[in-house]
Image (tube, rainbow, N blue to C red; front, top):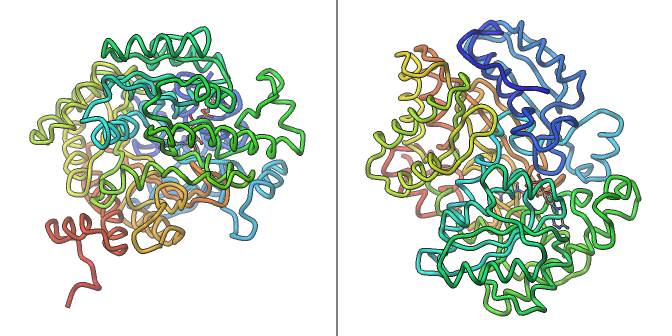
Length: 544
Ligand code: NAD
């Protein structure tokens, strides 16, 4: 069993390397990873290292890596250590990248079977997954936006139907109840339902669909938040609930539909899933089941429910299986998140390398003091402090924008320097951020200027973070929506309390969200143009 080192004693030659080591280990902590024995962290088959020999070689290399060296990781395998300099990242990672014409699941799996690549998802292969909390705030904000758009600012008195209680999807029940709503959450895997109940993300399990509806209606009528898990296949359950006339107000889904092998088709027993997957016709059967699932979602939409795709590419697979109306409902980014991205806002996160929960509680207080005027941030930090169960190294996430992240990073670095925190912090983010991803079925769906598939932006993002002093930088392909459908970049910077770290943090945490601002200025978003004007983001085409 792998668990990150804790405490203030180094196992490496410096805190930058130590940060990378502890966060890699943390990604594979059984409290954090969905299937650590297979190196799978979350998101279907998103892995932290290609195989166990690669994992051990990465750990060995990080342990001896000098402060002016850089470890290169190619799809989860360490392939070189090069002399660079102190400002350079200690680790550079490229995961799952394929040349355009070859960028499809079949070719990816052929190469994976040859042991030549691995699927890195977003934060699995880039060592900054922090358990389900990582997605919790985004999910909470999304449901808050749904509430604001359709239900007078609260989900009280509404029922949400969704599926998928995995690493990311498991945040949905808690996000709904944090918004005072009722959620029915379907999963085919009993262990995922039990795990979410154990971790406090899910309240109860229903014995059947009818029982779930009964519990949901009672809670809704009492205006009480409640999340209900139910063991079923979503492709069967969603149409069944529609046929039953279940009073559902909101429908979405977070099964692992981005990868047809990670979605259980109708007619396959859960226990036979692993072996059935080897059948060449399995992916097509999954797609056909997704078509039935999406048709059920569209049925709810036609009855007036708020329906959205939650970033798993379910619509595309349903369309591929011949369901022509699959894009009847929008993706969650254009529906609710784009205005935040346009301001450079996105999921900022940090983990306490000490392993001490008190370090995170102190940073929570620091954030509240730093941004006293931001009420929704304060509400989130308080809710998270009360309700989020730490998984692995204690960590926190909150959405911060351009002009905010650098302030938080510098304050945290000061807290490390003064000894207020027991050890340094790793400060990073999801690849799902304002200027770090090209993903036409998700983050960049329906861009104003039609630039959905332009992937220069995430590459520039990785280059600028590398040039600004990030501790590790990653470029991935296929995260969230699957191979061939996205390119994205990540960064993590370790706040170790030194002056050098302060200089690096100031640059990285300005330039990284700055990419989101310039990307959206370029696409013509007014919110981005206003931020650039007000905060002095330089846009060459508007100068001179
Ligand atoms: P996961 O693999 O950990 O969990 C997926 C869950 O779906 C599993 O518990 C599985 O048992 C269940 N499942 C599979 N087929 C099913 C079916 N037919 N009926 C009911 N349940 C079924 O994946 P995850 O990390 O939770 O991610 C879920 C999806 O969300 C992925 O496609 C991922 O790419 C996407 N995602 C979205 C966001 C976002 O911000 N919206 C972020 C990250 C990932």
